[in-house]
Image (cartoon, rainbow, N blue to C red):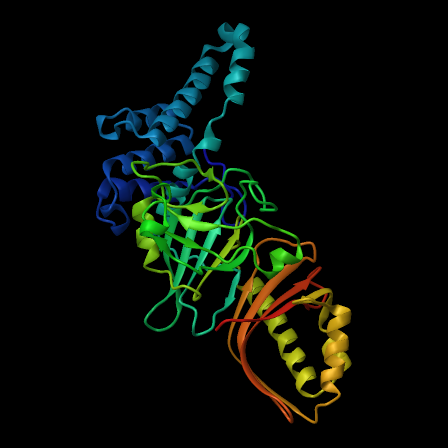
Length: 418
């Protein structure tokens, strides 16, 4: 089997109906998902599907074509098709090929499918497009009115999913594209480790023209790595961007950057239309969960209840109950939990009343696990009034829990630029 990425719930091959839909769309040409495809891209999809179906010779009929030119992905698919075809031929030889068993084993171990993630990603994205399928991600729990878009960088599937507000204000999927990530697997830990960081970020800058070397394509968008959660876990490095390919480069393997995430230049320019600095969030992880409404609602409710109770304890000046919402590893700037408790007890001792209002709240669940367990980021506008102080600010909380049966605790609290 060619396909190696994890599907929406568990790894599985496409069923007969899904394959039929793909072939009908590619041969018919009437589907909007097909209209923008070149003959090369159509041949790649057909060949990938044939390899998925265990038909390498059928795949070769699509790959050996003048239309395909010197496309490197076509060449890789052709190599894999020849490998699979050779194995089938040896099998047909039966006992006659028994002296070649060791060579056959070498062929089997020389599986090239790990280098074909682009073909895999494109086929899965094409199937979703043909089916008109909108995937609902678990990790986008709630978005405030100021959020323009959310980018999901799925390192496991090598796919970038983009969600943007429609005219009614609802978040809808607007893109599903192949994406290239760090050459080394895993989460970024240090400068130069060639890993793409896992976490929740925002696009914070736009680079182009003289500010950008040509090897990064026409435009680049840095994210705010490392953030406060990264700093808490001593992750370093910098300069993580969404960028393009070098001039005259049309294909790159799925793990090929120094830690950034990269798109073909034409795709990058299209995705740039969905970016608003500070208002476009970026979630990076592996094998995002989709279409699990019950789990998503349960997660949303548990986090919302925690924040509501925290707000209530704070406004009612229940200082010890309020402080119990904080994690043992808590940080707020230079303050750890001990310093934070001393500071808040001192402040609250001078309060006669506290009035709070939280609005425009965004809640994002981190797709990756951290040492403290699972993490949710909450960001909202906070209005604070007491007998001796007033303040309006933008607040960000990182909440963590070690398991689903344990309460959420505030791991990090910070004020951010609105």
